[in-house]
Image 1: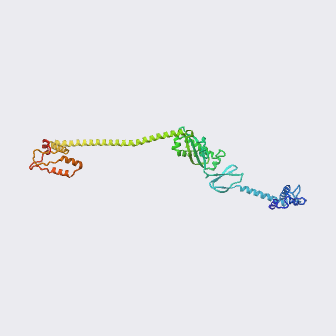
Image 2: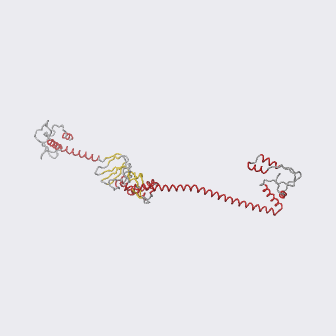
Length: 424
Protein backbone atom coordinates (compact mmCIF):
# COMPACT_ATOMS: atom_id res chain seq x y z
CA UNK A 1 0.00 0.00 0.00
CA UNK A 2 2.82 2.41 0.88
CA UNK A 3 4.43 1.68 -2.48
CA UNK A 4 1.19 2.62 -4.23
CA UNK A 5 1.01 5.86 -2.27
CA UNK A 6 4.64 6.61 -3.10
CA UNK A 7 3.98 5.93 -6.77
CA UNK A 8 0.96 8.22 -6.74
CA UNK A 9 2.97 11.16 -5.44
CA UNK A 10 6.13 10.38 -7.46
CA UNK A 11 6.77 13.16 -9.95
CA UNK A 12 9.38 10.99 -11.75
CA UNK A 13 6.66 8.66 -13.02
CA UNK A 14 6.53 9.11 -16.86
CA UNK A 15 2.82 8.38 -16.78
CA UNK A 16 2.07 11.10 -14.16
CA UNK A 17 -1.13 12.80 -15.17
CA UNK A 18 -2.03 10.24 -17.94
CA UNK A 19 -4.22 7.16 -18.12
CA UNK A 20 -2.14 3.97 -18.07
CA UNK A 21 -4.86 1.42 -18.66
CA UNK A 22 -5.55 0.58 -15.08
CA UNK A 23 -8.66 2.74 -14.85
CA UNK A 24 -10.99 0.94 -17.28
CA UNK A 25 -10.44 3.32 -20.21
CA UNK A 26 -9.37 2.11 -23.68
CA UNK A 27 -7.66 5.33 -24.63
CA UNK A 28 -3.95 5.00 -25.30
CA UNK A 29 -1.71 6.72 -22.80
CA UNK A 30 -0.88 10.30 -23.59
CA UNK A 31 2.74 11.21 -23.96
CA UNK A 32 3.83 14.32 -22.21
CA UNK A 33 4.91 17.18 -24.34
CA UNK A 34 8.58 17.63 -23.62
CA UNK A 35 8.47 21.25 -24.74
CA UNK A 36 5.25 22.48 -23.03
CA UNK A 37 4.14 22.67 -19.40
CA UNK A 38 2.19 19.76 -17.83
CA UNK A 39 -1.61 19.78 -17.97
CA UNK A 40 -2.83 20.60 -14.41
CA UNK A 41 -6.32 19.30 -15.00
CA UNK A 42 -4.95 16.01 -16.23
CA UNK A 43 -2.61 15.80 -13.21
CA UNK A 44 -5.54 16.29 -10.86
CA UNK A 45 -7.66 13.69 -12.63
CA UNK A 46 -4.80 11.21 -12.62
CA UNK A 47 -4.30 11.80 -8.87
CA UNK A 48 -7.98 11.08 -8.21
CA UNK A 49 -7.87 7.92 -10.31
CA UNK A 50 -4.83 6.58 -8.50
CA UNK A 51 -6.38 7.41 -5.12
CA UNK A 52 -9.64 5.65 -6.06
CA UNK A 53 -7.79 2.61 -7.34
CA UNK A 54 -5.82 2.37 -4.07
CA UNK A 55 -9.03 2.24 -1.99
CA UNK A 56 -10.74 -0.20 -4.45
CA UNK A 57 -13.27 2.19 -6.01
CA UNK A 58 -13.93 1.99 -9.77
CA UNK A 59 -14.96 4.62 -12.24
CA UNK A 60 -18.59 5.08 -12.99
CA UNK A 61 -21.30 2.84 -11.57
CA UNK A 62 -19.62 -0.55 -12.22
CA UNK A 63 -16.34 -2.12 -11.29
CA UNK A 64 -12.92 -1.15 -12.43
CA UNK A 65 -11.66 -3.61 -15.08
CA UNK A 66 -14.22 -6.26 -14.14
CA UNK A 67 -13.41 -6.13 -10.43
CA UNK A 68 -16.36 -6.28 -8.00
CA UNK A 69 -17.47 -3.16 -6.00
CA UNK A 70 -17.45 -2.70 -2.23
CA UNK A 71 -13.88 -3.69 -1.58
CA UNK A 72 -14.61 -7.44 -1.67
CA UNK A 73 -11.40 -8.25 -3.54
CA UNK A 74 -7.78 -7.87 -2.54
CA UNK A 75 -7.96 -4.11 -3.00
CA UNK A 76 -10.73 -3.88 -0.35
CA UNK A 77 -8.57 -5.66 2.20
CA UNK A 78 -5.70 -3.30 1.49
CA UNK A 79 -7.95 -0.32 1.97
CA UNK A 80 -9.18 -1.62 5.33
CA UNK A 81 -5.63 -2.29 6.42
CA UNK A 82 -4.56 1.20 5.37
CA UNK A 83 -7.42 2.78 7.28
CA UNK A 84 -6.53 0.76 10.39
CA UNK A 85 -2.91 1.84 10.13
CA UNK A 86 -3.94 5.48 9.80
CA UNK A 87 -6.28 5.20 12.76
CA UNK A 88 -3.58 3.48 14.84
CA UNK A 89 -1.02 6.15 13.93
CA UNK A 90 -3.46 8.91 14.81
CA UNK A 91 -4.22 7.18 18.12
CA UNK A 92 -0.53 6.89 18.94
CA UNK A 93 0.04 10.53 18.10
CA UNK A 94 -2.90 11.51 20.27
CA UNK A 95 -1.64 9.46 23.20
CA UNK A 96 1.87 10.81 22.72
CA UNK A 97 0.59 14.35 23.08
CA UNK A 98 0.11 13.63 26.79
CA UNK A 99 3.86 13.48 27.50
CA UNK A 100 5.54 16.62 28.83
CA UNK A 101 8.56 17.66 30.94
CA UNK A 102 8.53 19.34 34.38
CA UNK A 103 11.60 21.45 35.10
CA UNK A 104 13.30 21.67 38.51
CA UNK A 105 11.43 24.05 40.82
CA UNK A 106 8.16 23.75 38.88
CA UNK A 107 4.86 22.10 39.69
CA UNK A 108 2.25 20.68 37.34
CA UNK A 109 -1.47 21.00 38.08
CA UNK A 110 -3.44 18.29 36.20
CA UNK A 111 -7.06 19.04 35.27
CA UNK A 112 -9.57 16.49 34.02
CA UNK A 113 -12.34 18.16 32.05
CA UNK A 114 -11.43 21.40 33.85
CA UNK A 115 -11.54 19.91 37.37
CA UNK A 116 -8.49 19.66 39.61
CA UNK A 117 -7.12 16.10 39.81
CA UNK A 118 -3.61 16.22 41.27
CA UNK A 119 -0.40 18.21 41.67
CA UNK A 120 2.96 16.87 40.49
CA UNK A 121 6.04 18.43 42.11
CA UNK A 122 8.77 16.04 40.96
CA UNK A 123 10.91 17.16 38.06
CA UNK A 124 11.29 15.00 34.96
CA UNK A 125 9.34 13.35 32.11
CA UNK A 126 5.70 12.62 32.95
CA UNK A 127 2.42 11.80 31.21
CA UNK A 128 -1.23 12.68 31.48
CA UNK A 129 -4.29 11.79 29.46
CA UNK A 130 -4.27 13.75 26.19
CA UNK A 131 -6.41 16.73 25.42
CA UNK A 132 -9.37 17.21 25.72
CA UNK A 133 -9.61 14.70 28.57
CA UNK A 134 -6.84 16.15 30.71
CA UNK A 135 -4.80 19.34 30.63
CA UNK A 136 -2.01 20.68 32.82
CA UNK A 137 -0.79 24.02 34.13
CA UNK A 138 2.91 24.59 34.88
CA UNK A 139 3.67 26.89 37.84
CA UNK A 140 7.22 27.99 38.73
CA UNK A 141 7.55 27.80 42.51
CA UNK A 142 11.20 28.98 42.68
CA UNK A 143 10.80 32.15 40.67
CA UNK A 144 11.21 35.30 42.76
CA UNK A 145 8.48 37.68 41.68
CA UNK A 146 8.40 41.40 42.45
CA UNK A 147 5.48 43.79 42.82
CA UNK A 148 6.17 47.53 42.73
CA UNK A 149 3.85 49.85 44.68
CA UNK A 150 4.01 53.60 44.16
CA UNK A 151 6.16 53.44 41.02
CA UNK A 152 6.65 51.46 37.83
CA UNK A 153 10.02 50.47 36.34
CA UNK A 154 11.98 53.15 38.22
CA UNK A 155 11.54 55.59 41.08
CA UNK A 156 11.13 58.51 38.67
CA UNK A 157 8.00 56.99 37.21
CA UNK A 158 5.81 57.51 40.28
CA UNK A 159 2.20 56.56 40.78
CA UNK A 160 0.72 59.13 43.21
CA UNK A 161 -2.49 57.19 43.64
CA UNK A 162 -0.53 54.37 45.31
CA UNK A 163 2.37 56.28 46.92
CA UNK A 164 0.59 59.02 48.91
CA UNK A 165 -0.36 57.77 52.39
CA UNK A 166 -1.77 59.40 55.54
CA UNK A 167 0.03 59.00 58.89
CA UNK A 168 -1.37 58.94 62.40
CA UNK A 169 -0.56 62.63 63.02
CA UNK A 170 -2.51 63.73 59.90
CA UNK A 171 0.59 64.11 57.72
CA UNK A 172 1.06 62.84 54.16
CA UNK A 173 4.10 60.86 53.05
CA UNK A 174 5.17 59.77 49.59
CA UNK A 175 6.32 56.14 49.81
CA UNK A 176 7.56 53.75 47.14
CA UNK A 177 8.26 50.15 48.12
CA UNK A 178 8.67 46.74 46.51
CA UNK A 179 7.33 43.35 47.61
CA UNK A 180 9.10 40.12 46.69
CA UNK A 181 7.19 36.84 46.83
CA UNK A 182 7.10 33.26 45.58
CA UNK A 183 4.27 30.88 44.80
CA UNK A 184 3.75 28.78 47.91
CA UNK A 185 0.65 26.78 46.91
CA UNK A 186 0.25 26.40 43.11
CA UNK A 187 -3.34 25.12 43.38
CA UNK A 188 -4.50 28.15 45.40
CA UNK A 189 -2.45 30.46 43.19
CA UNK A 190 -4.27 29.23 40.06
CA UNK A 191 -7.81 28.74 41.29
CA UNK A 192 -8.29 31.22 44.17
CA UNK A 193 -7.15 34.25 42.20
CA UNK A 194 -10.09 35.94 40.53
CA UNK A 195 -8.35 39.14 39.43
CA UNK A 196 -8.17 38.35 35.75
CA UNK A 197 -5.10 37.90 33.55
CA UNK A 198 -2.65 39.45 36.05
CA UNK A 199 -2.21 37.00 38.98
CA UNK A 200 0.17 39.31 40.90
CA UNK A 201 -2.56 41.94 41.17
CA UNK A 202 -3.83 40.33 44.37
CA UNK A 203 -0.34 40.68 45.90
CA UNK A 204 -0.23 44.33 44.79
CA UNK A 205 -3.59 45.21 46.31
CA UNK A 206 -2.87 43.35 49.56
CA UNK A 207 0.53 45.06 49.85
CA UNK A 208 -0.91 48.53 49.33
CA UNK A 209 -3.69 47.88 51.86
CA UNK A 210 -1.32 46.54 54.52
CA UNK A 211 1.20 49.37 54.09
CA UNK A 212 -1.52 52.02 54.37
CA UNK A 213 -2.68 50.43 57.61
CA UNK A 214 0.81 50.32 59.10
CA UNK A 215 1.59 53.92 58.06
CA UNK A 216 -1.78 55.07 59.42
CA UNK A 217 -0.81 53.71 62.85
CA UNK A 218 2.62 55.46 62.89
CA UNK A 219 3.74 59.07 63.12
CA UNK A 220 5.55 60.80 60.31
CA UNK A 221 8.86 60.81 62.22
CA UNK A 222 8.62 57.07 62.74
CA UNK A 223 7.97 56.48 59.05
CA UNK A 224 10.66 58.85 57.79
CA UNK A 225 13.49 58.40 60.29
CA UNK A 226 13.02 56.36 63.42
CA UNK A 227 11.30 53.07 62.53
CA UNK A 228 11.59 52.46 58.78
CA UNK A 229 12.74 48.88 59.30
CA UNK A 230 10.00 48.23 61.84
CA UNK A 231 7.38 49.62 59.42
CA UNK A 232 8.62 47.29 56.65
CA UNK A 233 8.58 44.28 58.98
CA UNK A 234 5.07 44.99 60.22
CA UNK A 235 3.87 45.49 56.65
CA UNK A 236 5.35 42.14 55.56
CA UNK A 237 3.59 40.31 58.40
CA UNK A 238 0.27 41.99 57.64
CA UNK A 239 0.55 41.30 53.88
CA UNK A 240 1.19 37.61 54.56
CA UNK A 241 -1.80 37.48 56.92
CA UNK A 242 -4.07 39.04 54.28
CA UNK A 243 -2.91 36.69 51.52
CA UNK A 244 -3.35 33.67 53.77
CA UNK A 245 -6.87 34.83 54.59
CA UNK A 246 -7.63 35.13 50.88
CA UNK A 247 -6.03 31.74 50.14
CA UNK A 248 -3.88 33.24 47.38
CA UNK A 249 -1.10 30.63 47.66
CA UNK A 250 1.58 33.35 47.83
CA UNK A 251 4.55 33.51 50.26
CA UNK A 252 5.98 36.97 50.96
CA UNK A 253 9.79 36.97 51.03
CA UNK A 254 10.68 40.61 51.72
CA UNK A 255 9.30 44.15 51.76
CA UNK A 256 11.80 46.85 50.78
CA UNK A 257 11.04 50.56 51.22
CA UNK A 258 12.76 52.15 48.24
CA UNK A 259 12.00 55.79 49.06
CA UNK A 260 9.89 57.67 51.60
CA UNK A 261 9.67 61.46 51.79
CA UNK A 262 7.16 64.28 52.18
CA UNK A 263 5.20 65.27 49.06
CA UNK A 264 7.09 67.46 46.63
CA UNK A 265 4.74 70.42 47.19
CA UNK A 266 5.68 70.75 50.90
CA UNK A 267 9.27 69.51 50.96
CA UNK A 268 10.82 72.97 51.60
CA UNK A 269 8.46 73.73 54.48
CA UNK A 270 9.01 70.29 55.89
CA UNK A 271 12.79 70.74 55.75
CA UNK A 272 12.48 74.05 57.65
CA UNK A 273 10.33 72.42 60.30
CA UNK A 274 12.76 69.54 60.49
CA UNK A 275 15.70 71.92 61.01
CA UNK A 276 13.81 73.71 63.78
CA UNK A 277 13.04 70.39 65.43
CA UNK A 278 16.70 69.42 65.18
CA UNK A 279 17.80 72.72 66.77
CA UNK A 280 15.27 72.21 69.54
CA UNK A 281 16.54 68.72 70.17
CA UNK A 282 20.15 69.97 70.13
CA UNK A 283 19.42 72.61 72.77
CA UNK A 284 17.60 70.04 74.86
CA UNK A 285 20.59 67.73 74.63
CA UNK A 286 22.99 70.52 75.62
CA UNK A 287 20.84 71.43 78.65
CA UNK A 288 20.62 67.80 79.61
CA UNK A 289 24.39 67.44 79.34
CA UNK A 290 24.90 70.50 81.57
CA UNK A 291 22.40 69.15 84.08
CA UNK A 292 24.15 65.78 84.04
CA UNK A 293 27.41 67.55 84.83
CA UNK A 294 26.18 69.94 87.59
CA UNK A 295 23.67 67.78 89.42
CA UNK A 296 26.13 64.98 90.33
CA UNK A 297 28.67 67.54 91.57
CA UNK A 298 26.07 69.31 93.70
CA UNK A 299 24.84 65.99 94.99
CA UNK A 300 28.39 64.97 95.91
CA UNK A 301 29.04 68.26 97.70
CA UNK A 302 25.77 67.99 99.60
CA UNK A 303 26.59 64.44 100.60
CA UNK A 304 30.06 65.51 101.75
CA UNK A 305 28.68 68.34 103.90
CA UNK A 306 26.05 66.04 105.33
CA UNK A 307 28.66 63.43 106.20
CA UNK A 308 30.94 66.08 107.78
CA UNK A 309 28.06 67.41 109.86
CA UNK A 310 27.15 63.93 110.94
CA UNK A 311 30.77 63.22 111.87
CA UNK A 312 30.99 66.47 113.82
CA UNK A 313 27.78 65.65 115.65
CA UNK A 314 29.01 62.21 116.56
CA UNK A 315 32.38 63.61 117.64
CA UNK A 316 30.78 66.26 119.89
CA UNK A 317 28.36 63.76 121.35
CA UNK A 318 31.19 61.30 122.03
CA UNK A 319 33.38 64.03 123.57
CA UNK A 320 30.53 65.26 125.79
CA UNK A 321 29.77 61.72 126.81
CA UNK A 322 33.45 61.11 127.63
CA UNK A 323 33.71 64.36 129.62
CA UNK A 324 30.59 63.50 131.57
CA UNK A 325 31.92 60.03 132.32
CA UNK A 326 35.31 61.44 133.33
CA UNK A 327 33.67 64.04 135.56
CA UNK A 328 31.65 61.35 137.25
CA UNK A 329 34.82 59.34 137.90
CA UNK A 330 36.67 62.41 139.21
CA UNK A 331 33.71 63.26 141.40
CA UNK A 332 33.78 59.79 142.90
CA UNK A 333 37.52 60.11 143.64
CA UNK A 334 37.09 63.66 144.95
CA UNK A 335 34.47 62.53 147.40
CA UNK A 336 36.97 60.01 148.74
CA UNK A 337 40.07 62.32 148.97
CA UNK A 338 39.31 65.95 148.17
CA UNK A 339 42.82 67.41 148.81
CA UNK A 340 44.71 64.88 146.75
CA UNK A 341 42.27 65.08 143.93
CA UNK A 342 42.41 68.88 143.93
CA UNK A 343 46.22 68.91 143.71
CA UNK A 344 46.26 66.30 140.94
CA UNK A 345 43.74 68.32 138.94
CA UNK A 346 45.82 71.44 139.45
CA UNK A 347 49.01 69.77 138.28
CA UNK A 348 47.35 68.34 135.19
CA UNK A 349 45.89 71.72 134.34
CA UNK A 350 49.24 73.51 134.74
CA UNK A 351 50.92 70.86 132.62
CA UNK A 352 48.50 71.51 129.82
CA UNK A 353 48.92 75.28 130.12
CA UNK A 354 52.72 75.27 130.28
CA UNK A 355 53.01 72.90 127.33
CA UNK A 356 51.52 75.60 125.04
CA UNK A 357 53.71 78.59 126.13
CA UNK A 358 57.28 79.53 125.20
CA UNK A 359 58.22 81.22 128.46
CA UNK A 360 60.43 79.95 131.26
CA UNK A 361 59.49 80.26 134.93
CA UNK A 362 62.39 80.33 137.43
CA UNK A 363 62.15 80.16 141.17
CA UNK A 364 63.36 83.50 142.49
CA UNK A 365 64.25 82.10 145.89
CA UNK A 366 66.89 79.77 144.54
CA UNK A 367 70.17 81.27 143.42
CA UNK A 368 72.70 79.96 141.00
CA UNK A 369 74.15 80.32 137.56
CA UNK A 370 71.66 80.21 134.76
CA UNK A 371 72.62 79.83 131.13
CA UNK A 372 70.52 82.01 128.86
CA UNK A 373 69.11 80.21 125.85
CA UNK A 374 66.71 81.72 123.27
CA UNK A 375 64.26 78.91 123.68
CA UNK A 376 61.40 80.74 122.00
CA UNK A 377 63.37 81.20 118.76
CA UNK A 378 64.69 77.66 118.83
CA UNK A 379 61.17 76.31 119.29
CA UNK A 380 59.87 78.41 116.39
CA UNK A 381 62.74 77.24 114.20
CA UNK A 382 62.19 73.62 115.11
CA UNK A 383 58.44 73.99 114.41
CA UNK A 384 59.17 75.51 111.00
CA UNK A 385 61.91 73.13 109.78
CA UNK A 386 61.62 70.09 112.01
CA UNK A 387 63.85 69.16 114.92
CA UNK A 388 67.47 69.82 114.01
CA UNK A 389 70.80 69.58 115.80
CA UNK A 390 70.44 73.04 117.31
CA UNK A 391 67.01 72.26 118.74
CA UNK A 392 68.30 68.98 120.14
CA UNK A 393 71.29 70.79 121.67
CA UNK A 394 69.01 73.43 123.12
CA UNK A 395 66.78 70.80 124.57
CA UNK A 396 69.79 69.00 126.11
CA UNK A 397 71.17 72.26 127.46
CA UNK A 398 67.86 73.20 128.96
CA UNK A 399 67.72 69.85 130.66
CA UNK A 400 71.24 70.31 132.05
CA UNK A 401 70.59 73.62 133.80
CA UNK A 402 72.34 73.27 137.23
CA UNK A 403 70.49 73.87 140.40
CA UNK A 404 72.10 74.84 143.72
CA UNK A 405 73.20 72.03 145.89
CA UNK A 406 70.88 71.12 148.58
CA UNK A 407 67.90 72.88 147.00
CA UNK A 408 64.75 70.99 146.26
CA UNK A 409 62.82 71.13 142.98
CA UNK A 410 60.49 74.04 142.65
CA UNK A 411 56.94 73.47 143.73
CA UNK A 412 54.36 74.44 141.08
CA UNK A 413 52.30 76.11 143.73
CA UNK A 414 55.26 78.27 144.66
CA UNK A 415 55.86 79.08 141.03
CA UNK A 416 52.32 80.22 140.62
CA UNK A 417 52.68 82.55 143.57
CA UNK A 418 55.80 84.21 142.09
CA UNK A 419 55.46 86.72 139.39
CA UNK A 420 56.58 85.91 135.97
CA UNK A 421 60.14 86.91 135.16
CA UNK A 422 61.90 86.77 131.82
CA UNK A 423 65.10 84.82 131.46
CA UNK A 424 68.26 86.96 131.43
